[in-house]
Image (spheres, rainbow, N blue to C red):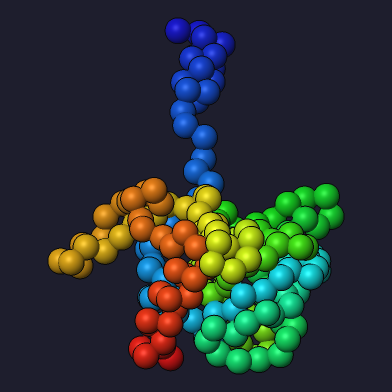
Amino acid sequence: MTLLARTLALFGALSLMAPAASATTIIARTEGELTTLSDAVVVARVVSVAVEMGADGPQTRNTLEVEQWWTGDGPQRIDVLNWGGAWDNKMYRIPGDIELEAGDRVVAFLKHDQGLYFSTLFGWSVFDVAGTGADAAVTRHESHFGLFQRNKAGVIKPTEASLITTPKTLPELKARVDAAKGGAK
């Protein structure tokens, strides 16, 4: 086989390979587990989203106007940081991390460190809220994840978001957070 034929065969074989994965692998946590792992759970409206250069590269500062502190306490306005964002005509991000837009209403499970907040488990710890009162629907941010669950024997196995029971309404989500408060840190 000539060099040209071998090169074309190699490029042909490479073109059939699957593209690189773009997902973050996590162990799916229940709302009770997220509550226990979090320093705060808030219902909030996203006021602004801005990308800035941090010590480790671009970071997104999501400023939230807190409507309710379901756990923890703090000011009415908080900043939630996540690594990445659009900077210098390039996009930097961790697949599955939070992606918020000004005007979004969310429930966020958060870690707190030195005056700043961070999502407890990437986008898995954020729910979008649509509507108000008992009819307010909630939807978990669940894209770009390789999800796993630990079974009763402690074995970790792959799963899908559609197989995990999540609350559908704001009151249902609040009830799950309230039920977990006794064991929360």
